[in-house]
Length: 193
Image (cartoon, rainbow, N blue to C red; front, side):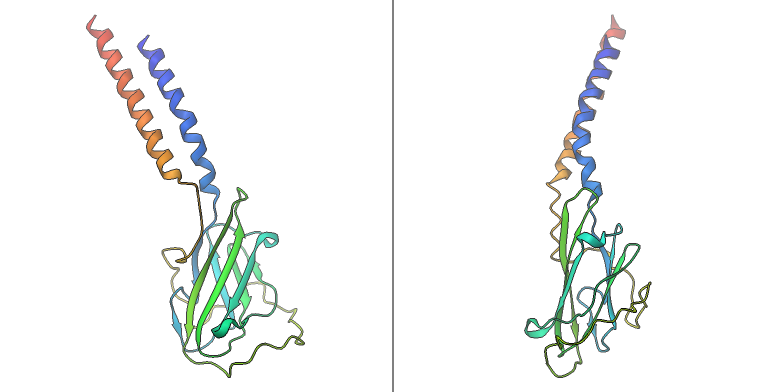
């Protein structure tokens, strides 16, 4: 009887654990070059974003804007494993915002941004619309002198709404502990008889 109740209690806890599994499929930013919040004097040729999992090209959108909301990239992103890089067209010195939106394995879109400041720049002029994008993009992104270790936290404004699965784990642990405690109590009572 006690063994049956213990199995029943554990079986009741399993469905609570299952809804938390899809949250592990969310992708997230693990680092960038330049790093989020960095101040760089020399403009990189490319901006690189590193993710937890390889983003799908079909669901990835990256934009770079500079001071006065002037676009600062021309050309398509380049994908290499979990890294995505875009060509950087620097303008005036100031704040640059790299906004990204990628899909996750579970279909949930993840978006955020990386901000860095270019301390020296060129004259503020919008990029030419007649310039042809280069077709010879490198297959692997080149490291720039400003490359540093991956940021330990995702971008500040990352909108990865996982639906609050942390509480599901707490409930699952509580159910498992109650089931285990109940099973041990019933076993102890049956042993006394």
